[in-house]
Image (cartoon, rainbow, N blue to C red):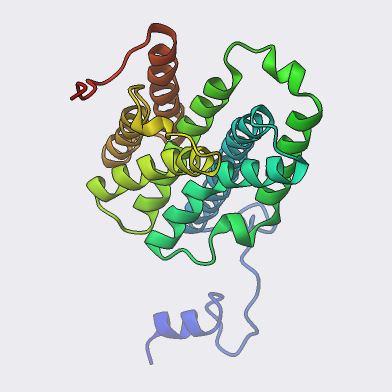
Length: 255
């Protein structure tokens, strides 16, 4: 065995048989502990960033749930439903699109049924609307404004979740659109009126464009939060402008 290997086995003193000692700095003070490897630091950073992003997404999802629930409850009050009917309509409007999306991508049980926060938020919006309907009605066209907010937020979440479950760009856009329009369709069907999405307003088109922004942003690896904000702004802005200036798609002529 050579001297160099003996030194390594003896702890670096150069004297065989001695107990290995703690490395000393040149001035005799113990050396400072080594920093964790860079890979560990990056792993911790990525974990914290992922946790923050998940928190943001859940918050956006609950805000969208509240907005859609208010639009559903407002329709229920306008149709003179009792409080149970208003709560049912608020929950259906708030969660139908998300439940359909989760079932189609195999995310079962759907988060709206597995997490009690969605039911609580929907019922809270329904109760507020039922007892404070006059205050909500003072807003200019409240049903459409809250519906536009829910449409934008759900289009963002739907497309992100579809991409997260391995769908391609086209599938993610379609599921993002479905997440946004599903609740409104169920809400309108429950009160026996033609769904807004099938009428002349730019409704599904706004949700589809918002989902496209998300898909393009993810493909270009842009920062997540600005992409989500831009997507929601595009969807809500287009829907709001369509409401304000009566933008619409061509309608079939009467026979």
